[in-house]
Every structure is written in structure tokens, then in C-alpha cells.
Amino acid sequence: MTVTPQTEKAVVAGPEEPRNRPTQKHVSLHLQRRIREGGIKLFCAMCAVLSIFVTFAIVYTLLTQALPFFAKVNLKDFFTGTEWQPTPEPGHYGILPLINGTLMITVGAGIFAVPLGLLSAIYLSEYAKPKVKAILKPALELLAGIPTVVYGYFGLFFVTPLIKQVLPETQAANALAGAIVVGVMILPLVSSLCEDAISSVPRALREGAQGLGATKAETTMKIVVPAALSGIVASFILALSRALGETMAVTLAAGSNPILTFNPTKGIETMTAYMVNTSKGDIETGSMKYLSIFAVGLILFLLTFSMNLFARRMVAKFKLNYQ
Image (cartoon, rainbow, N blue to C red):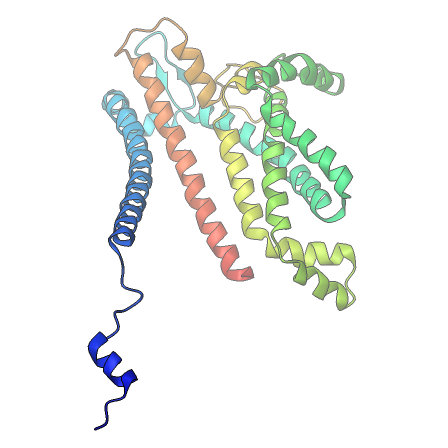
């Protein structure tokens, strides 16, 4: 074999070293990145565990304080009784008047806020010009920043006098004023969430429907709204859950009269109003009146939890139908 200068040079030099071989610096940077990513993952996991821990801590607190109450009060009398009179002890603890008052406020607020919120969301998403939307949406969401106690006095000194002009027999504190005030409170929540759900519908669906000859209204009601129905239903349930747990506004506007009535012009008492009215008074720790706060809070928690489960099922159902 003839050895050329090029061959001799290659033999002397030996095999060429790989160019992409990781250096010590690259290994160190990769290790630092993995440690940093692991730390972020651990922190996020700790936050998730903390939120679950807080939930269980709340349930534990309610149960430990409510169980002594239920040990002294018959469950049948508690859930079917129509008289709530904690004092004088031993008192009467039929929670139906409080549940009835809470549901009257929640349903009344939903009747007021759900259609108005949905229609305003449709207008903002489908019809309003950008300049008009830039003014109306922040103005509507401004209602969410007003303190609830202000809403309570608004219902007491503005809404109730208006109702009395139509229904003179209306009491100073009444369920109708409380429902209207809470409806105004949750209106921004319904409108904002519905508007976000409607805006997230792909524009291609709108263009396809209009290309087939559908009008703007037909496209909105038959294509866009059904496609966004999962988000719309979720906004309704979330807003009603907010109404279910409202405290100060209903305490001032709806009153503190725990009676079982379906007349919206009369004063009622919700579960949250009873809790705040009782806790701000002078009560002995461990007394039946004291323990009744946690019993009512436990029932309120179960109602809210049931609504959230119902919302999840409804959202999953509508996603399955309109996906």
C-alpha cells in the first residue's frame, strides 16, 4: 500500500474527537435547570396540598363543633321543624325557615341576574362596537367592587321604598329587596363569565353559519350560545353559589325574622344572616346557641358543595353534547 502524505497525517492524528461532547459547564447548567424545575414543581404541589388541607380543616372545624349540637337535637326535628327560636334554652331548632329564606334570596337573585347577565353578555360579545364595549364592560364590572354592606343599605333605603310604591304592605326589611340587591351583586359575575364563554367560541362557526344564510340573531342563538353552553351554565351555578353565601346585604335588606313564608314582601332570615347576627352578640361558648352557628354553617357548606357538584355534572354533560 502506498502511503500518501494525507494518509500518513490521518494515521498520526488518530480518530477525530466528537464535536458535540458535553462539557462540564453544560452538565452543570443542565443540573441547575433540573433542580430549578423540580423546586417549582414541588412548590406548586405544596400549594395544591395546602388548599386541600384548608378545605379539610374547615370541614373538621364544622364537624367537631356541630356534632355536640346534633347529639342534643333530634335530626328529624332539625330538618322538618318550622320554628327556629334558639332562646330561651333549650329552644326550638327547626332549620326550615332559614333554608326557605336562603333559597328565596338565591332563586330571586337568579331570576333577576341570570337573564340580564346572559343578554348583556350576548350584546357585549356579538353586537357591541369595540368603543362601546370598552366603556360598558368596565362599568358593569365596577359593580363587583362595591362593598356588600353598601348594597345592604342600598336595598334598605332605595329598593324597599320603590317596592312600597307598588306593594304598600311591604315590610321595611323584606325578601324581595334582598333578592334584587343580591341579583345586582351577582350580575357582573354572570355577565363577565358568560361573555368570556361566548367570546371563546371559534369565529369559524359564526362565519360558516352566516355563509349558509343564517342571520346574526340565528347564528347567535342557534350556534354560538349552544357551543358556549358549558361555560354559561358554569357561570350560572357559580353566581348562584355566590348568592347562597351572601351575608351583609341580606342581613340588612331582608331582615332577621326566621319565619317560614313564601311571601316576598315579608322579612325573613337566611342562614348566613343568622350566623352573623348570633356571632356578634354575647353568647356563651359551648352553649346550644353557640353550637347552632356551626350546625347552620355545616348545612350551608353541604348546600354549596352540592351545587358545585351539580355544576360539574352539568358542565360535563353540555361539553359532551356540544363539543
